[in-house]
Image (cartoon, rainbow over all chains, first blue to last red; front, side, top):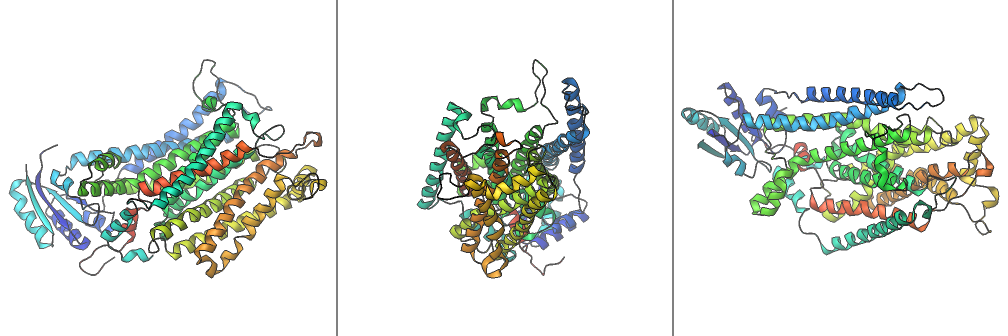
Length: 173
Length: 460
């Protein structure tokens, strides 16, 4: 695990935490917020960040659709099975396979994309081990982690305290 | 919903309390389901060992109870996806408390359903022939056959519903992990840590997670409508009288949602009573589900009527005949005391109409919808009725095809009954294990629906 230097705090109240996040962003830092459930207040405080996941899903859907049509067309041409003089490569029945594979590929790639993007972000914004040992973020507490130089820790500690943080911890390891 | 005033901590504790060591009666119940499952496994062993001839399936009735069960169980699954995806997109807030259990039901119902086509092939060990794979003769499946569509539709549906269910579980498993760490339960923590995919609840994780959830809801919505449509085309694409109609796709989908919601109530009303969850599965939730049941019951009733009307209006003697045979059978068979007793399709028809069209009528009354016992009994009847609807469709048309010389009759044999009972045992065993192993309600979503902890007045 990469070395972490910075400050993290726990909050009982969502509004106090959101104001602290806004203040930290004014200082030019990008804090990581931990919460038991998603809240729009957090998104507003963080400046409405957007995920790139839909592009992965769209690509997967198109790939699935293409696979569905081309696979059926290829197998029908490879093993020709004439039925009542109907077209060998028939679009309406193949649409069903195309549709199902669109859904299947989108589902698989969206899951993989979600995990991949999550891993990338976790590597970019590492959490100190002490945060991982604090077991109430999944339950009823909000957390804010700021990655900063040891010289700046004092400033952020004061911001956290002024916004009513429950606990403030300084990490220098 | 009333859950909005609960604190996050209370929701957490209430939900985790459901996972504590169960009452001895739970094991008794589980034993009952396992007995049914055992009967099913025994019947299955006999069926596979002796061969498909041991069932009542014979010329001309090639599709019997097994396909009935397949269609029935796939339908049961539909309610879960409807609640978790369609009602998510339409922002119906009452779904929050019941969607996890409904989704689990989907997964278990589709798993149950998946067993039947395999069994129905007669030689289940060759079931992989259904999948297009490169082989020495470069022989491919016929993609113009609805049966090949069905393989794709059902396997896609199973994959997507399992993944959707697992995605919903990630934050809740992280809660279980943290709880286990807090209590010093090392084994549990070791199991839950990888299952939670190392979830921490950071804003980055939530951002990707919520978007993934939305995308899943968006793709599961057309999927759920397509799957039972494709199942219906297994019938409608043939030329058999009574099957070859365009109404089948919407008719099957409405029936699927109808039966699925009835099953949701069948399993969740006992869960609410046993765990004392009146504050979460509120009367409003039960009322809302009942309203959708009434709505789908009307569609199903209308579809029954339309089938008869089109049977007459088509002018086709074969269509007319099949819709005469469904309720009445052959006239000489229409005796309860004579030598030839009443046939299975006739029982199926009248049970279907009674349970699906007449029995839900009392739900129109507010008082009945508010009475859990009444709702539970009506939903039980709907489950029976929907099973017989599927049988009515599968069995009756095949008995009376075009050529009277090729008519036949069908009674399921003891192995078919055994396997049917076993399928219910399989489903309820899995569901009972789920209720005690994983949070049956989405803790994260209940928190999201609750009023967040604010120091000052809440603002928009």
